[in-house]
Length: 293
Image (cartoon, rainbow, N blue to C red):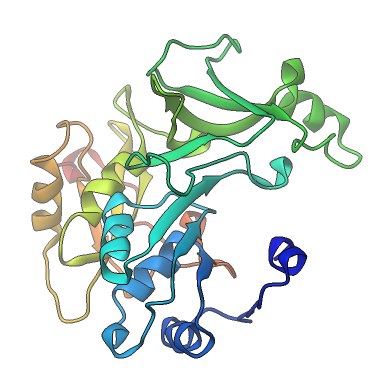
């Protein structure tokens, strides 16, 4: 918003996101840049009246706030003929730390490279930098990082260990310095001693042509500690059974990662910005030994 004001651009603000109204305003105002979270792009892509609106003015769209499913990213770019850039950051980093950049190589699933004068690296539990390609916690240092939490010195000390802000996000970095988010550290599912990152499973679910939205989370289990559960929203008029969903994922991912527990919802709970709120998803009763497939 501030960047738009600085350059004297026309800025249209929506008090509440509605895909139909958004498409109408894009056409009315000749919108060239759009900013939203992944669920908004999915809603625009799958809106039944999308082709009735002229959105050819769109050049660049930017997403953040949550992980963007690769299938949604590719589908949106193809449908709208624009470039979709993914950024990453937190409130503590004011709020952007890295991004993919216009006209530069973009890698599917990557949050790009750190912004100018911002440093990022991936560390283990002892804050030692991990080898390239290995998964660890993303830490950030730069002019964009907060000084601390207001009147919470202990929380500040924990988050800012060694002068680096600890994001709580698990990720990896490749040979070109591109970062990839694996998942939130606190969202990690441990099933029978194996680590399962929900985002990896969600990426596979989003590839299914009948699935509109999906959220993967751990469900308490007597034998395995946690079972992998998937809350799924289908496209209007489509039908699937829980077993079909499980089998679809099982064929495309390691055997211990596919969801044994699948349930369908009309919609996933979302916050004011459209982010999916996993904490508000009602899960089935804790599973016993016989509930696992």
